[in-house]
Image 1 (cartoon, rainbow, N blue to C red):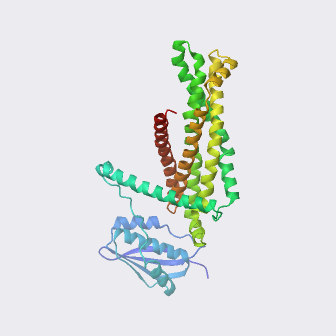
Image 2 (image 1 turned 90 degrees about the horizontal axis):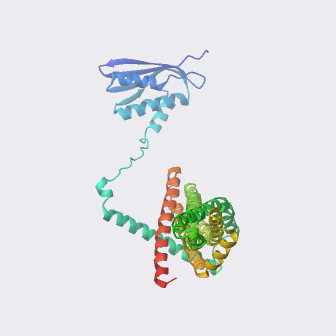
Image 3 (image 1 turned 30 degrees about the vertical axis):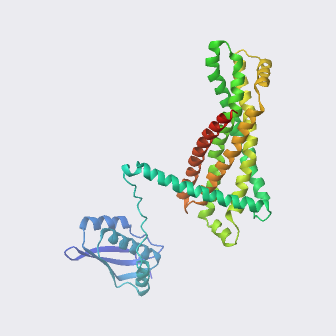
Length: 376
């Protein structure tokens, strides 16, 4: 028996009441009529009721059900009563099952009014909630560290070694570029003013102290916040989406000990080393500029030796330890609290970078004030 081409026909049974008659074989081998064409006809006729008649149907498969579901969805969206008559028994049951529960409608994001968003009380409440979550996360991290010291933590050394490599050697290229350029920028800025007094030689002091105390550690931390902090958030957010963190928790393993602690310790070890590396390259970048000003390398090196101080070095190193904890906590917390979905993972990575940079700026200002009060 030759298959008949599938077709439909709209018949007006009564004013504004249409009957959709289906005929032919609605199977995979046939060219099924386009639903957009039917939708255009329905919109033009504006029916108040639509009934599907399947008395002339031949063979059918899932293509028929897909077409019927499109008809049902259109009627639901346009608030048109929908009915089906004379369909094969199994097709009728499938349609009833498919339409028993309304299709999921994604809730529209309702943004508060502008005045409410600018309300300082709303901002303070949001800041307070974020602070509470951060303190709670730090508490869990402290418990994990205590268990690690006592030898009871579920932390693997292989994970720690992997994250050390990810945060350290993999970051050499970008740290090298930014550090040399920052050293050159400091030298150029200082040279403009020092040249007025004939004191170009003190460019070496400016570059050395600026890199050791401030720019070396801060620029390294900002780069690591955008690179490693975002990576931590994306990794943990993806694991949250794939329900891997739920599986770890179900097995009785603490996610903080197993996932967060190796990342925090790796950054805590590698950021001070990267800071020392950045300080050295920044001084080299300053030497490049100093050479263009007529300062010999011997003069530059001698001035560096006179200006270098263990105090300046330790100030930058202490900042690197604090910054490492802040970057790791911001990235891991955003990832652990991520929603489930690709958009949520992206938001978690963005939130990790923004939060880490804010933490860095606030911590840097606070530590500078503290060291100034101590006379360091």
